[in-house]
Image (tube, rainbow, N blue to C red; front, top):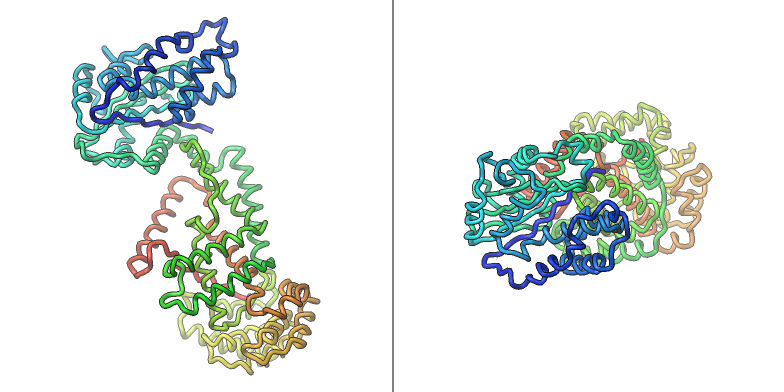
Length: 577
């Protein structure tokens, strides 16, 4: 995997070198550690003095541990690698050892610098630079001066042609806008100088960056990531295109194996069941809290304690093995490219804190709100969608499609009714649902039960299951647990997953039917969130368009009155056929 190292220390105005003269003394006193190692000794174990100095350096300068030289030393603690790291760590922290003008002289004149003329210093103008003039300019600057170091491995520098000051200058010029953005400096105020040091193992450049306006400019972790991303895209364009297109063997394996497993896990969630007393209890408590809520039933509009309860339900759901594994795979795919320019990947955050999965938070709220409104819900396995005749599937699709006109919906519902009245069990079940829900046709519970019963007696497993739920919950029809168990049993005998779930946990389900299936329904919602959040096969342009589209959609929602952190639930209805 190609990588860059980017470290950006800085000088503050009025900095004194006295506080760190001890490092100069140590530097001079340990020539054994910094001088070139003779070939005969270079592969011998590091000396005690080198090891002691390295421990002190990483203690006092923790960022030095991010360097390639430190990785090499840990992998092979030889005298040569120890010497390389000590020298690199010291030059990386010269801003704490010497004055600004001394730093300019060091990077422009030190042994190993690739000189363009009298010195190795260059900027974006292409003009010859005079060390003394740049020294004076930097020394007198009243604001912050950053001194970033950008390092590559020798093989990467050779492969990408970054072995001359000219190639580095061209690359930095192309990154100027991102440098300014990362350092929070207006582009017209940005000033930078650099020098290329062609070290044997890790060619690198030293830079000097500041703003002509001393009141502006600061660097955050986000800014560092932004800069490193831009550098990576300009240094490794071909390699990143290969990663985006999944052309390497690892990406091929990820595509064929991990993505296949990812989709299998989604399918398992979509058709599976889950028993969680904790989720059931929390969902009931959330419903009670929502009963006193004034305003939109959306996560972003809830009070902090209620949002915390929603987060707890989401994270409890994430304990399910299917969800946990799918989330891990999603994160691995998502962070694969980021590792090119980011030294350490952040730990996998709780699912409730992952912005891309915020829709599940609103789904938790919706499920709890349904308990308040005593809404009927329907669970159907994806495999059941294809069991109905094609004409019934088409009619149901028209009825539920967002783009369907009222006339088209009305005509499709009328056709579905005619099929139901002709004895088509799938149409009877589908039209019974419309009557029970009451949003397409006038709500009529007795008629809905009649159509469900006709379909169930004709052998429709979904209708049997629905009758079992109706009689068990006892909201729309008088509760009849014996009838409920009878219909669940008949449906289970036809391999209905949800009916089997009820019969297997009958003692629990019969005691608390309203929240019994809440965890399973959330599992199904979760499957759709994972499907909608599947990391794309990034090919460069397509990914950029996708990000822009999502940003525009978010801006539109905010303009419509939604809060910035509120991801309104996508209405991805499950069409029964």
